[in-house]
Image (spheres, rainbow, N blue to C red):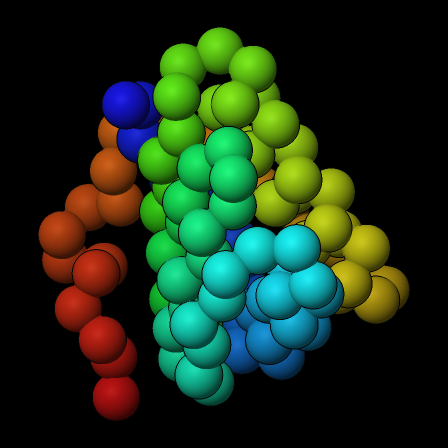
Amino acid sequence: MPQFHAQVATPRASRNMMRLCKHFAHKAEVQLDERQAQVEFAFGQCLMLADDERLLIDCQAEAGEAEKRLRFVIDDHLHRFSGEEALKVNWLDGPLPPRHRQAEP
């Protein structure tokens, strides 16, 4: 199953992640705290990690339509829920590098 990730520069990473995941909780299984979230969609899954400067997003979905849909849903909703903050989501293939997966203080 393909993995892909993004790093989104934002000083409001936790706030953006919380808003996004509270919305996703209406249709997906979500585990959430102020620093990380796990979202299980019907078409893929996503781990999000928030620190003081960025939101890290690590996703996995079946190749093809499921992968395209997950990328679109995360990107589209993040832009909608971030208010006037102009966020740039650059997706990269592969998992989030291990050094980023460690919880930051």
